[in-house]
Image 1 (spheres, rainbow, N blue to C red):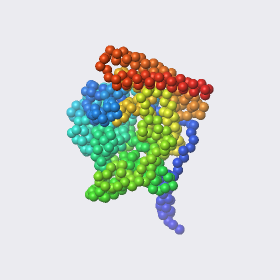
Image 2: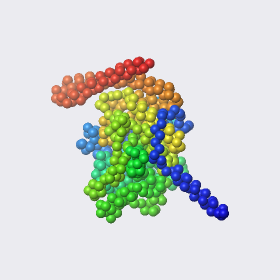
Image 3: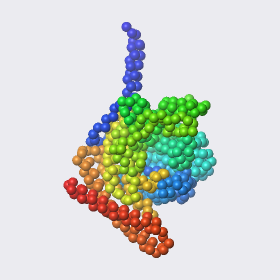
Image 4: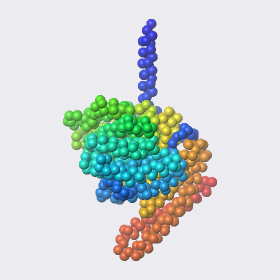
Length: 585
């Protein structure tokens, strides 16, 4: 007979094994299922979001310093149609108007970012603090709270002060850690008495890969195979330092939470019975979300990243891995620096194994992964070339986060879909479908036990879409960028999302279908009003051009022909939608 202590040890060992196996994500189980009618937990928070450079405008007003995006967007050929965020949505001048839209939507929270160079023009706190920038964010925060809308604040949504890029090389330099910490500390000091939810970074994957590997985003550097890893390494350290600063200096009196917003597309194995495809799909997710989440939750990079990048580095004749390493002290300092996890998610890819050559000349983040990304041609593709609607991937990603990171508190910080068109179209039926399906998959994930506390529709307004300029629109509200005043018009999705919020979910099939019908009816009227406004604008342009004999033929086409065709298209689509609705009834 075994001694009692040995039996206890055996019981503990079996329990540990059971718990360990429960934490493994099941790649072979993918239940797409039917639509689930039900409601979200009481207190679930519904919101919408935007970011400083994408919405504020006022790029050189009231003492704001230059950001890397101000400089990048002014370089010819970097942005679609050479657009810039100079004026964008003019959000800097429209606080009350935009908070009014949020109130109309019945939002529980609004997610926005604070522009580092608007507060500290050079990025170095000891140089100068811009009090007018402080005043702007004070007004925004106070107005949100007056309207019972919780502010959720991102400290870094890509707009690094240009001075820090020029002097130090931006996120390639370890000095960013202390400069960012000083900026964050200033925000905690000035705004922390009213802000309870802070996020250090938004989608650092894009900052690292698109800013320092492909050069598609500011600062536009192409440091293949090393730049992204180095930038990410410093970003992770900066995040940890800010978390510790808040924890030791501010948490006791301000009682807030500090997290990070990580983006992740879902990677699904092409063949869920093929182990190589499963491994490739997991690699895809680990190189994306896990790159940042695993150090923050577990103290070090995913083992698969260390293995693959390390092996390829050796094959390339390098003495050390291109993936930097954390010291034992850094690992313990970084581990656990997350009070809640922000998850940004838009789309899914099918993944299969594909070996890439290890030549030093061809080394890059993308070839390090040894995989290929595929899409199903049947997936809806309404706008951005990278964004396909694959709702079930959202549930899969949320369950992956639950299994990998101990079921952390999650706020969905970005989820939405774009359209890509010259013409105005307020009847965004595809966006209604996207929000309906994706929020329903999130509800299923909550039923699975995932700890999701809130959802942020991306985005409140149409805005500057980085290297795509204004050619893509993610907004619930249409913004007329040709009009100096940047008026906002509600799309059909506003009414539909508002109903989801009011019902805290999906009560029953008949009611949800009724929401959709009413939303389309409303937008048909709005489309006609907007078309009439554009006709007036076109008439004014015609009069101006008649009195300007030097006007080029091209200007005539872009300012008169295109808007006129668009106006006719809008009117025809509105009539057609009304005809369909009458037939259905």
